[in-house]
Image 1 (cartoon, rainbow, N blue to C red):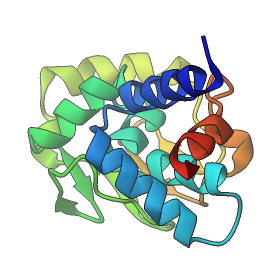
Image 2: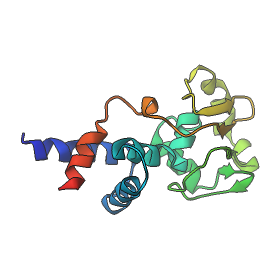
Image 3: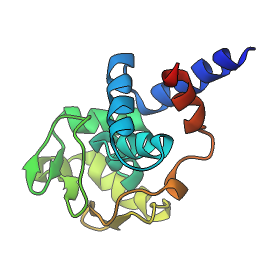
Image 4: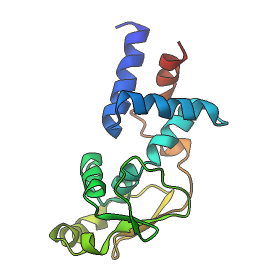
Length: 159
């Protein structure tokens, strides 16, 4: 496989992992280029701060797809308000959790048992009893999944 082929594979791997379409992924790249700091790190930070990913990282969804469904079905609240847009960017200090309706579901009862053993990244604080959390800091380069190579994605779009 050529270098270009490896770059495309890396881009697709990240796109599919985060459940993002090509047009939106390119927009994240363009935002990352405009921000100060390494473009690859900024791109991954943009993806990590999506609401569906934050719900997944908090342990409220066992997969990103399940977390996305929780969001789109209206079971997630941000700062006390229902937010059903999976791509919404969650900022530092914002509270994320299940809505009162979402907390009454059978899934929430099961989740309270399952969430105890899940690891949460350092940039998130989670109350496992209330099924809520807070974004304590922006995700850093150390919080990026090591299976991804953001520099290959930057090289792909730099052409």
